[in-house]
Image 1 (cartoon, rainbow, N blue to C red):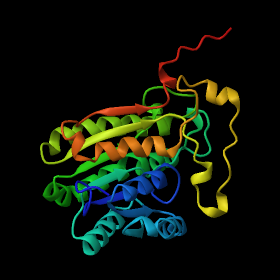
Image 2 (cartoon, one colour):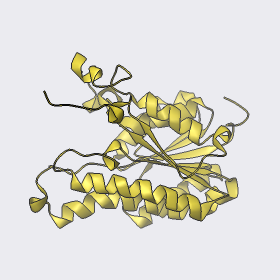
Image 3 (tube, rainbow, N blue to C red):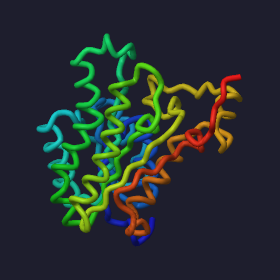
Image 4 (cartoon, rainbow, N blue to C red):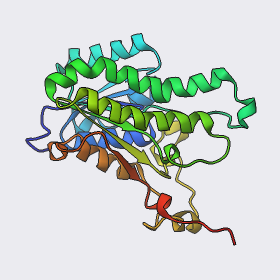
Amino acid sequence: MTQQTAGRVALVTGGGQGIGKGIAKRLLEEGMAVVIADRDAAAAQETAGEFGSLGDVLAVTLDVADEAAVVGALDQTLSRFGRLDALINNAGHGSSPPGPVELLELSEWNRVLGTNLTGAFLCAKHAVPALRSAGGAIVNIASTRALQSEADTEAYSASKGGLVALTHALAVSLGPHIRVNCVSPGWIAVDDWKKSGKRTAPELRPEDHGQHPAGRVGRPEDIAGMVAYLVSPQAGFITGQNFIVDGGMTRKMIYVP
């Protein structure tokens, strides 16, 4: 814990599993109190219990696409801690099942964008008063899919591209009192960061690691380290930016032999 982080509070959406869980753990280790907000109530409670020894942690059930639920989660946060210094918009999911765009149902498109993009907007909208009072920060978790695609990922890619644009729009609108940045992860292995009933060891081949100039597939800790920096006072001159954390994969040219 440092004097710069002690007493500060972060809310992490989708914090019960995966990258969000890694972020929650790192921020607790940095000395922040953390609200773990997740649509999966069991995952949120399990993670809060697992990390309880690290610091002050609160589990909240939250569907970020539900505006009333967002308001309620922020009310719980402020009731418990009295302030909010960092909002991490991490909650999201992909299009399931993926398929050709001509078969993509409007309801599925709306479901993906509702969580991945509209959910981030709703959380930011209702967190602004508390964040402005604290001189806080927002970090949105997008994806390298905002910049490149595989086939049949239109809803997911569009939602993440929109999140990158939402980041710089919010940064301009909310500055100088609130900084807003984005992290776009590449391939991050989260199998061992899921809730206990679904947790497995990552099954990764040498060629999976070899696709990355950094020499390995990413881990939640890699994203968490960047987020911890962006919400810290050391990042006070950084806003409106998208940071790609992908082991260099998107910079590697691929030729089909």
